[in-house]
Length: 401
Image (tube, rainbow, N blue to C red):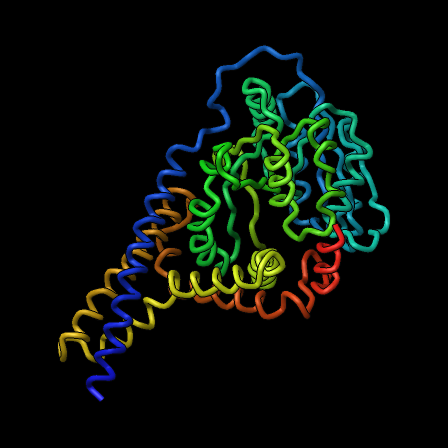
């Protein structure tokens, strides 16, 4: 029995050493990404003629946030823009709020989206409906739960034109409202600053590319050349898919930090948090089952397993050499997880330190959410903004495109 425990313990020690090494890399990459990603105001301004910007703002059941968003857009100091707000078949008072704002401000153009055709995701269709009304040479896509500082459009346009870019996206401050989002978001964000580092996106030699749906501007010509939202009509995470098409087609794109000027709500409650986690796993599964399963186990071991292993090692700590070493390595690996969570909470997400202390629970929620998405990706529906999307149909659409 003792031999079996020793074999088990030394196997776990090897795993924990690998986890600690991975976290060392993750933390360094996260800090480098946060440190070296340029800010939206980091450019040498070149004179331009203030091209017209069409803000395309899809909204579905956003009565709680749409007013806050529109107020921030109305107050922009950029001189030449329009705000196209699309009510995407809301069943709350979103439409009423939009039309009330439109009566008071001529910049706001209200649009009621037509019935979504088969094969389209809801937001993608709403964006296309908004595009049809747009008259600007530059398109700015944002979300109805996003708040914008007064000078953000001026800065974004100047940055885009000064660097002669085709598209520019800004990293927002992710706003967490409820307890479960506050303890879960730090664990997710670690991977946003590593696997999806802006530094990789800004490197033309790297394949990594995506947009933040809460804020990206793109030249109209570029948007049309890559197929618009029609080209990603079946994609659940359409902003990521559209950014990938822009880079793959050879256009110049860039991601900058805008978290001091833009804030976006990531999840509103437990239900939207749960569906958001599942929604992250679905595209991976549709791309490759093996990749999705591999990512799930990577997340499982990196985020969660050190905690139960630590609890297990406590019972035998200092009784045998293998247990003592296991206890020490599990302590190190859990500390590494906490370091990553604390950096995210204090330096990047600007949450309270106590939110990082719930890392084990937050990690478990992420793991269970990813597992649920993995299990449901093909045969069940994913709920998003009051709609259900059936993954079987999604797979068929993906193959036919």
